[in-house]
Length: 319
Image (cartoon, rainbow, N blue to C red; front, side, top):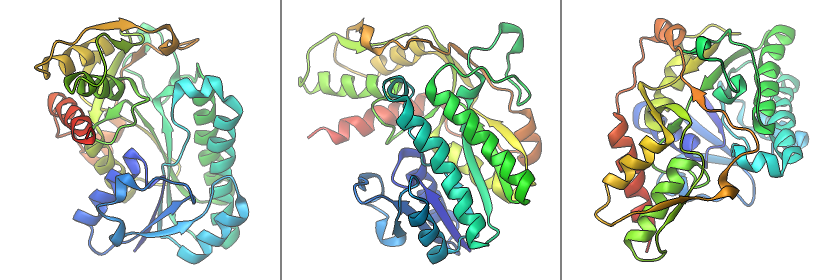
């Protein structure tokens, strides 16, 4: 079986590649990269992956890549995924996430193959939910509160439309907060961990910079997330959408406090106004009943280990 991962050089994509290589030896694994894509996250496995040069924003290059690979299973994980940056560059975010997804689906349709396709949407599509809507179900209304969230609504609906219009085997996910080693430092918990590691090495002074600490998140480990993706594509019928999330519900301040507790250094912090979003999503607790009923999947890695592994990842990166 040939498996294609878009975004294979990113955090989630590289962990999915790890999982497939370790657990599915029969799979021939492919990834799509741009000429300038950093390969740090897959350096340890790049000899076991076949990389095709292409760009989601260029339909012709995607058609060539899909013709060359002819995948049986596609995990579409590539995206501009930083919410804060989407306020600075909304057009780039919309183009990458919406047009890029359309180009992927069109290239598959035009080449005439029939793979199973996973479209990775986001819990951000739900926006600021009401208290009586928690835990959030897949039927909850969309209230996107950022250009990123708008792009993920469109990506989500493109997946559904291509399923309806062309009978393509497409399954969508709305993943809630997931983190761990390799998480980009533009995301809050990884930014905290990186700064703590830098303070420990006396490379930056206290206080570290933080944004809004009051948001509530249900958090899970990225290594559990990729297992969920795989089992979903084994079991789900086409056209479905699933919330996936962890078991630990915490505030962003709780995450910061936990990370500080793992440090032997004195860590102080202060709010940096530049880290505050024009509009924020402060309540993200999922109902994962639909997904668990289908798969029986449960997250295995506890929240504390996830945060410690994230901190140790940043410690190891600092020379």
